[in-house]
Amino acid sequence: MNRAPSKSLIRNRASSKSLIRGLRPFITTGLALVIGACGSEPAPETTHAGVAPSSLSADSATATIVAEDMARRIGFLAQDRLRGRATPSQGLDEAAEFIASEFRRLGLRPGGDDGTYLQWYALGGVSRAPNVVGILPGSDPRLRETYVVFSAHMDHVGVGLPDASGDSIYNGADDDASGTAAVIEIAEAFTALPRPPLRSVVFLTVSGEETGLFGSDAFVRNGPVPVDAMVADLNIDMISRNEPDQVVIIGLRYSDLGDRVTGIAQSHPELGLSVIDDPWPDERFFFRSDHYNFARAGVPALFFFAGVHDDYHRPSDEAERIDAAKAARIARLAFRTGLGVAESRVAPAWTRAGLIEVHPEKRMTPETR
Image 1 (cartoon, rainbow, N blue to C red):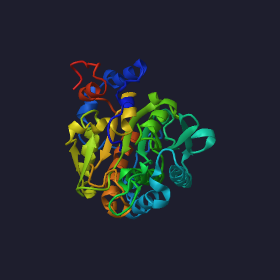
Image 2: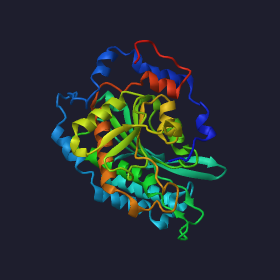
Image 3: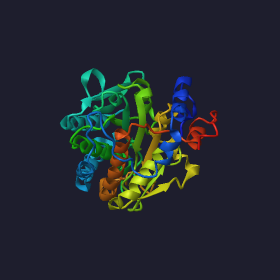
Image 4: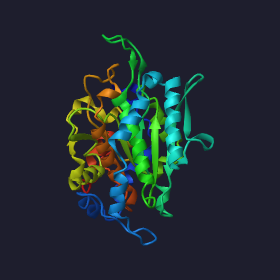
């Protein structure tokens, strides 16, 4: 996670078209009924073929997200050989190739440049850095042109000042190898379903988060799918530390995605997670990770987060200190949330509080809660 908001985040570079797009959900017919129904996980809907998704299939897919796989993938990304995955660096490129190989193994459609999984963006001068993009096309002829995005940043801060032990490699196991591993695990769960969901799903790992959210900005501006077609971004950043039975959802009150994720956590007690609203509003965490670039472009977004700790941005953020079981349970919650959105014919909608926070120049109608 980015240490603090940069000037590039504070500038409002969203176009007026993007801002108007953020208002569209509020003028759709029947919004009040939709909002009233968001207190629990959306009920399975009938597809265009008349076949309802099976909750047993969703349970089986969820069960593919396991602590052992989370620990293995975090361990690869946070090893010393990758030297902290700074943007740009050879270690970051190796991490990107590893993620691309996982997406390839899962049979996702490449969403990068020239038929690959890598989207390269310029950093100025001759430098460039990669994002990794895999896409699962949806099963509905119309809704497959809309997208649910799962995002995490694969970069960290590289090599820096040594700590008392002499360690100078900032491995970033929690920040954010944990979220990156979760995106891969969630992709595997989606591909385990007997059929794809109605909407398409994008699995995205970005670089440049630690230096100013540059990778997610490049994806939103020049990605393989139009931002107008993205209905939600579920961003996962630092999920493997702190209290084992709770997850903080940043942006919980900013869209009806908050009601959806809370309802899922309540209806699936086997996840062992309490959903907590942002207890650190003064830290402005909503503006400090990659979901913000989606939100300011009009896409409703949630940030799955477990909070900072003493090893944050230190060499001691090592794979040995993660709670892989907690990370896996949060990934399962994110998977079920995204699956519910991808299976719903009703797109998520901003709340009044969300639009005022992200775009304070906008004021909603009295009908908007």
